[in-house]
Image (tube, one colour):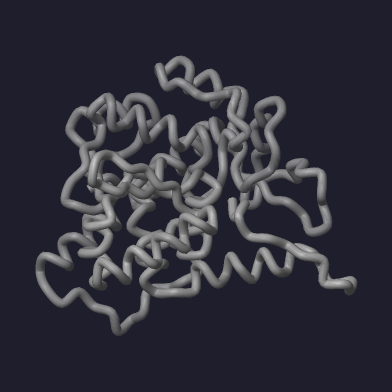
Length: 277
């Protein structure tokens, strides 16, 4: 990420990452570029024309912004014929955008102006994709169920701990947390050995070779609580869509749980259908 940003020797003892961090902040610190990054959290590639209409700016203006994001390593660009497609460069960029967006509380004055906007907002809060994992009430319900069954363990990293070792659950209650899977590092959530067996038994393929954490906590911007991200969250979301447990609705990231999905989540995790509606 930001591989094109040069970091030069400033001749003092200042952290050498400072110029790169400032360049990264500058890339995000523009409302049009921020709107593009948030839109691309749906995990799909968008054309420049689609982003132009979404951001509400002139094509030439949008093209300039996209050029900066591509040059800075936040977006990847592909061309097919006369169409120019862009997408988030990788999962690290998606995580960065998610984490920054989660710090921005919805402004109380920003109320939906139309019934259509209110319905779209309600659908996004009920269930949506957050890059490549499930979010909203759906994502929280699934995360809570995985944790309650000992398949996922909530952990915290104490300050000053640099080795990434898990310190234990952040809010585990009186019961000791289930043992994490071998080789995992603390990222807010840890997939337990029982969790690994559950994924395998449920026919949900996990990519164990990826450098990406198997499980990671992502702060949900509507629920203000963490939902499951990482390789396990991506695998679960992909399976839910492929198996017809969820279907995409509307033109944004909203998803709806189907009757088949309600039955599957109830059987596999004991999720109450009422929490999915």
